[in-house]
Picture 1 (cartoon, rainbow over the protein chains, first blue to last red):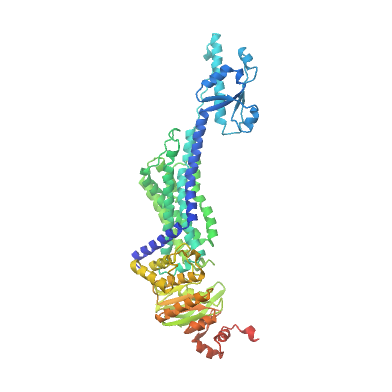
Picture 2: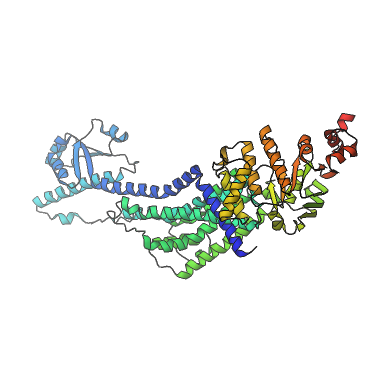
Length: 395
Length: 244
């Protein structure tokens, strides 16, 4: 058996597995769906963050008893993005029932007390347990403080006192967790979703062509063909890896197009995945696709049934999630050793590429070679298992 | 021609095949007859090299099938127990997939597929996916797939099991045709009538051993029984209860 014949046989097996699984519509859709879920989730979350920002700027304030403080209402109305509406009869109820984020109540005695320069009470009804109303509430409180400070200053000036003297502190709030950063944190999940896409994309073929093939009883006839076992295993592995690679490309394209649908610029976020990133992404991810599918094939071959193989896949999928989640929560520093860990190396490379950081070619080589070597080892293991009668006949 | 000598196979404490020896000639149909669990399938699996014998020799056209299994497989066409088809591929694609793996391609492969589709009279179903096929139709696909590389030796593991009358006749017709073409056909069955109607030579296996080997007439003479079925029962040692 010459090398060319072996390569041809591998190609035949790969082509058949691709054709076979492309006809499995249900599996195909489940892959497409799982691959799209990540980018869609990111898009949805970012959109919410952006909406929240806009909401906080444009605030609608329901006021009960606006006739008691016409000057205050007029001032509020003049502030940018503020709309005053009549408040509901049951203010507390409305906030509790979440029909309103905030309701302002101006009591009857407001005008009298204001005129007498006594503290005039304004009630702001809020529900502090609600995260989504927080920025609106903050804005309303801020507006009243601002009004209060302005009137206070005017009163001092009419009494001939400089208002500066009664402001011993000038407190400036420096917000560290800006919406921008929150959004950037969400974007940190993109490398993880791309890696997951590779993992999920190859899973179907990796299990169906090994555990599934055996369960259907088609493994025995397949092995009747005059070829070394490693030919069948390699052909199936490459088919799975190809599927994994295609889902990575799909996810990357989807993520690259996120800025079209999201007001990222408006939020001051620079996020861009373009064609020029593709070589870097491919160099980072292709070896991972080979590795993850080789691993999946081995594990699925070891399983006694297709069902068992699938449940093992459920555990394996945690593997690519570990660096992703860790990386999104605690941005990990990059160390040279990371490139030598099969799942971690590609993740770090990918974050570098997407973050626009320069990465040494050696890092790509190290990560790629390690993944490739590990894949070949796993393929040998699977080929060995394919030679085992207990495995072939699932005893 | 297939020559088997002193084949042994154990699974843990169970000895499935215990010293099986026989020959299956070219230009003849050899029946491997035995009750369920006698070791027929295990013997065949060792013949077509998906199982390794613990001991013994197998020669396929004088090729050592234990030492060089792939060379032997090139000369074997096999219908295994349970056909193992791909539900999402068509009948023709099955034939082509195995043909390609045997190194046949291009026009030759297309012609070969057409030939087999004609031979097995499956023109109407050739380009349908096998997922919805009847048992008889699936048997045809598996047979066509087994014959794609024009093998000199054909092994059929209970090919007529579960088939209706018409399909059984079709399979018998094919088997006879294969003999006419000068091939060595070895087929296993637990059905006496099947074997007596078809075979030139019969190997009776019971509990992993060959208990008799000969033409139907020789077996009848050997046991002194008039019917082959009684001969089979006597030889396979299945008659303890009946005669007591």
